[in-house]
Every structure is written in structure tokens, then in C-alpha cells.
Image (cartoon, rainbow, N blue to C red; front, side, top):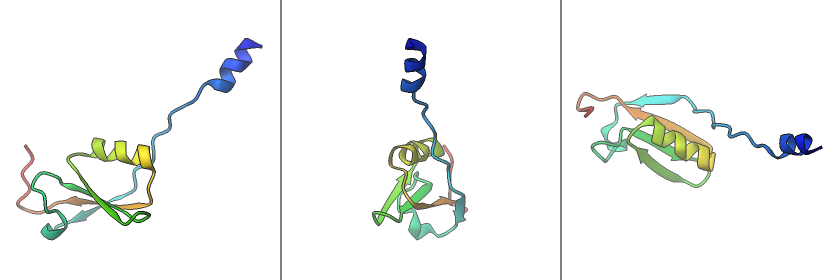
Length: 80
């Protein structure tokens, strides 16, 4: 009986599926020099910028928004 209780209480963390990241060369969408990932939250009308995909994945796992994702691919991008 205790084994059945353990099976029922064990939870599994599920990662939120990363939507397709759109490529953008519009510099005005990315006002910060090092934040190359942009997320537009369509539910709350909020815009977020991220340094890398891992930070964006944390946000998606936590809030699970309906969103659009962009990555800056312009010539003046410098990966440090």
C-alpha cells in the first residue's frame, strides 16, 4: 500500500516546448547590445529580452506564456 502511495505522489517536471524561434535583422527590436533573444508575451502584452536560450527556457517553464520568439541575426552581433 505504501508503494502505491509513492507512485501517486511522485511528480514529474515537464519542460515547456520551445516554440520556433524566428530570425530577425531589425535592430530596433533589440535595443540592448547583448540581449539577442526577444520574447513577446501575447497574453500580457509584455516584451522580454534574454542573453541565451537557457534563460528563455527558464521563463517559458515558469510562466508558460502564449508568445512569439525572435533571435537577432544582424551583422553587428558580437558573441562574447
